[in-house]
Image (cartoon, rainbow, N blue to C red; front, side):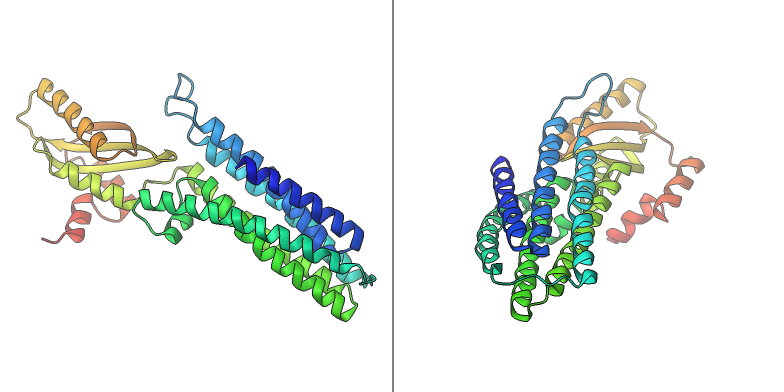
Length: 323
């Protein structure tokens, strides 16, 4: 990511120089876009660093959600530094009917081509990283990017994809400006780049919002844990399973189960320890596990489960596996 940061700063400076020299709104917007990406990468590096701290007395569940917090700031940075300036510059150029000489506009093309090559290399690396994360979770690349547990991966892929689309839009605006002699098309390209950044910022912010509020783990993990619990000889019935993402590949698991009534208190403790160990060995994502003995006849607990899922876990399991 440090190499990508250095490349982004270099590209941003080149775009800025070309935009100021030629007066291209599209290039100035792309410069703001690249500077915004650079600040975003600084925030993502901060997220990666802070989220690796070990759990302590103040944060007993660790600092995994630091990634969500700083990624949210990155989304805000994309909106503030890139989108706002691009939209303003585009509208200013379009509504001002400002005509600029087009003789020097050709200078923008080499800058855009170099930027495209660098952004393409960065995107390839980002996609490779995202594909690896998706493979570890047993999901498709599209599915993982739509609902990731690590927003920094989604941020990098979306930023690089947006950067390439922005370069195409900028090149089109510059070309139309050069052909028609009207800066209107340059401004229109700038406006489109700004609107594109607004969409990207919203998508990233929405992902961070869901994770910060407390999103449950992948439904396939929940179902697999539920099935494994139901197979334990000490458990008569699984009453409730609660999960929450507390970081990348970190899941908090809370289980309410009705244990076989003939067990003594000591045997129940031993069973909980064994089940905890069994779950951790099979599901590496589980970070903290809490197991609470609960009678299946507890009406209050059943009501909360039904209110949450629309049915009891027993009914859910029967629908999933009728046999």
